[in-house]
Length: 262
Ligand code: ARG
Image (cartoon, rainbow, N blue to C red):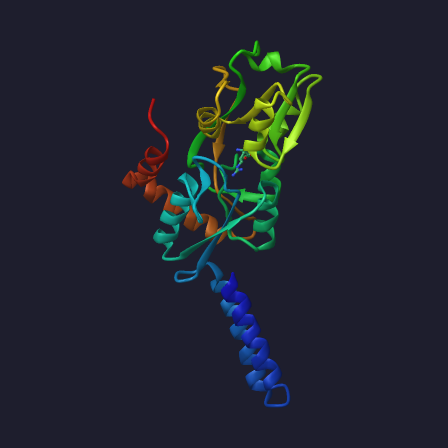
């Protein structure tokens, strides 16, 4: 992406420099700008990934690095495509807009494939099966999704947990920018339960005393990579790369690195 801007700027400079010169040069400069834009996600270029690094074990910060399953999968895909991976960290509910506007090429953020999102972006083939679960305090009487009726529920803004919480009868929803903040609110007794993705839930429960994950899952979902609607060429490339990584065992290897088998 940065490259396009740089090249377009350069072309603009060439244009203005030759503004009083011959017409041919001007046309050449314009063609070059178009060609560079098409080469935006070509071999040798950058693959810009939008994420929200508040979601262990999929994406989180370790020092100044963003690590996790999604970061490793995206790096492996970039390698397959001969591209350089660049990670942009942002709020979860900004990721789709970043991909739509071309600020990022792909969104990789433990993102669930939903009908609503499919209206605005495309999704790659799924790379993992996931689920929404409920976190409560160890002494809570909430033991099933049905028991959430009438309760105060913490969620991360704009996630599927947020979406499902809206369907719970008489529930009050408290939305937080980070999943971890919802978990803190639970620890402090500000909410009765948190709806969040299974693997992050396990990490948060491990890091905080007095919490547990309810056995019965709320939903089962698929994670996939989102890509702008018009970028069907990149979609195809990503699917091919994912299939290669699946066949070689690399995908399973990455998941096993971050998730301990039970
Ligand atoms: N799977 C959920 C969703 O797609 C939550 C994802 C949150 N991801 C993150 N990196 N914070 O809505």
